[in-house]
Length: 350
Ligand code: NAD
Ligand code: GLY
Image (cartoon, rainbow, N blue to C red):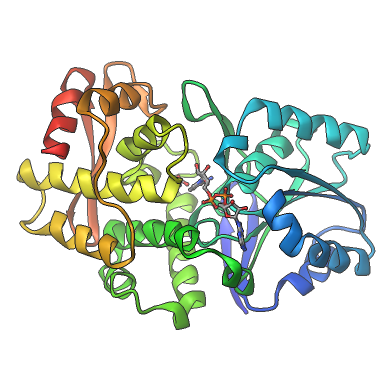
């Protein structure tokens, strides 16, 4: 088992290994005395892993209850959050009890937000998608989507433990697994050329634990320095500003990871055409994405994408931050005036 310690406002361990779900109860019991555990999951993950998780918790002395919502980004809204909070209250969950997010990034983000606003309860995260393992389970960003855009309401709220059982990734459909590849390539472009090359080759399935650990360590280092996203952490938004708009334009029929893949390629084109990036960078990223069955382009117009970008929560008055890659392993955060956003998107699509 691999262990990474995050030292943000809360210090917690990220455990990565195989067969860990069976140890959920004992790992949680090392951190809190037996109490009520509300397991929050989606309808797909529920069928696959909820019983195993609950049995492990029960064996360690916890009393469990379960809330599940229809799988997918379409559930990441205030209605589901409201139902979740009502459920926690009906179950008489107190701040001495725990909330366990079992699932992908949607379960983690929503259960995390529920924990943050429901008596500021204690939360544990069990990521079951590759995307959640390498990115969303760590760092304490929690959120729901609003009609206006992605993750528009949320809170920073760190977990007490992240337990990543790599065996759970075996049941992921290829397309959903690929969402995690997009985020892994993102880490490579931001700061690790070796990770990029390994992931780009598509030949890393035997090394999943190592890849997850590498990404989590990178995120740990960034979050330890800038937990509240005022500087360095913005690097993690590579591909996200265009990606979030594309995801929203698709009415969330396009997954987050696929949208980020497109956003990453498009912003690399902008960086290259502006002379900031070395020549050939966008094509290198495009090939890495294509090799992993990820999309690199979109049929939305520049106007449609720019409109979504201008609503992005990263907008600050008359400016919006973009992460521009300069080479594999290095990116810069650049503030673009809002009146230049449409031109930037046109360059990205050209
Ligand atoms: P998700 O949670 O919707 O999971 C994707 C699909 O995979 C769902 O249908 C789910 O039921 C299914 N699934 C999950 N685990 C499975 C398994 N082991 N076997 C089979 N099917 C399984 O989405 P996601 O792609 O994991 O996460 C995307 C979300 O994460 C987005 O909302 C995004 O905004 C958020 N995100 C948050 C952060 C953060 O820092 N908080 C970072 C990146 C992404
Ligand atoms: N995934 C972006 C962040 O955690 O900051």
